[in-house]
Image (cartoon, rainbow, N blue to C red; front, side):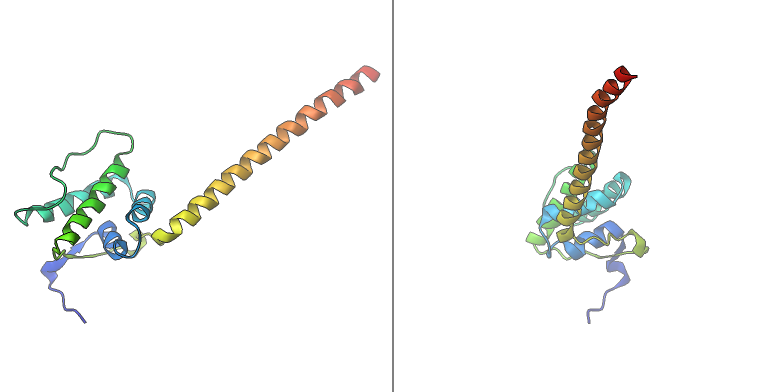
Length: 154
């Protein structure tokens, strides 16, 4: 059992999730899970915390700036920054603080390898809804000429 000093612990649910999944799953899938579960503010604050830690290292590896992107997909870009910095720190064997969760409800229960399955299920549901809508429209169009014939008979 590894004994950890309280000084080596950081309470951050997002970084806890990333730390526990970073080496087990492809980076892109971890990113999709993070972007789908955490808010813009949580991603930004986690990125800030990781960058603040990396600044204490002196010659810090990874990303050189902490500028918040001004784009629509800001959360995705900031998540990529987190994952890239995790990768850079891991590559040079930096001992990160242990990230823990104070609120277990704020840990995504979706494992990154299941993200594709959930995405596929959502796509199937969306297409099913579209097919049902189109079926109703086609049925209504077939009924309109039949109603016209009935009206002319009356």
